[in-house]
Length: 89
Image (cartoon, rainbow, N blue to C red; front, side, top):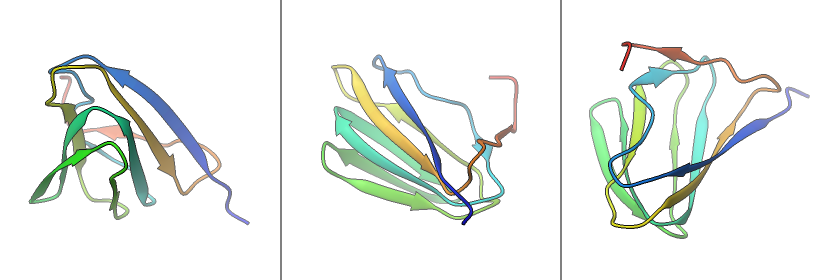
């Protein structure tokens, strides 16, 4: 069994991690708020109850585009979180 790990994140409007990738898929579950999720060349706007998944080795990021706190969980298909940022942002 490969295991899983996760991030629970609270971001204020305009906040979010910079562009990065993982050597395994990641799934996001929006608990509260509104997120713009970019995976490769695709971007979606997700709200509470929405999910999205990005494949391994594909650059992605998310940003709180709402007016309230974004609460989101990033589920990683790995027992250990491995994350490579593409910039210093």
